[in-house]
Length: 55
Image (cartoon, rainbow, N blue to C red; front, side, top):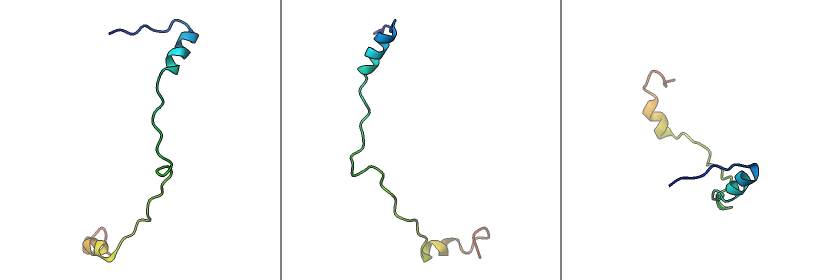
């Protein structure tokens, strides 16, 4: 299989016009924000005895 290079700007534009566009996310998925990050007492208890994380 071989592909010929475009020899003119017009050929290049025509070739590029044949490239399919990437899919777009559904409107329901666009710009979703994550829930706020929370640290509960169980997470705090896991690290409170460590020197780097203790109070």
